[in-house]
Length: 101
Image 1 (cartoon, helix red, strand yellow):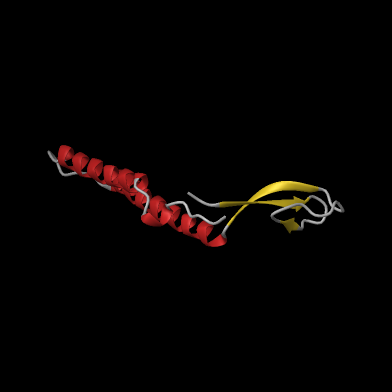
Image 2 (image 1 turned 60 degrees about the vertical axis):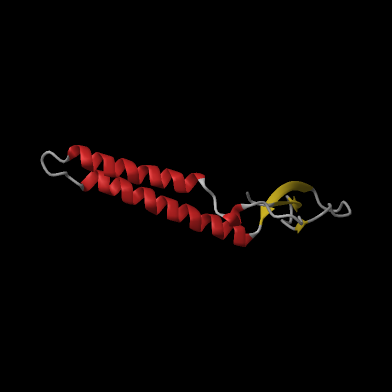
């Protein structure tokens, strides 16, 4: 889970303030921010997952089993697909919520 920080952004000048609004000079709208490091970490995880799934799809699209080997090829691809899905369902320990915000 990604920790979010609530802040206010002026629709006129674009300034961002937290944890409260300014003295009333600007017109603010509430926005949500995330830490850049968490954003980058999630992008890297998504890239890895996308690469893993792309590899599986590429294998499915380009591999032609030898005659009589369709079932074993199918089972191998099915096993690889299950592995990809399992990796997506089990977040790492770094994904636990952080306190302090």
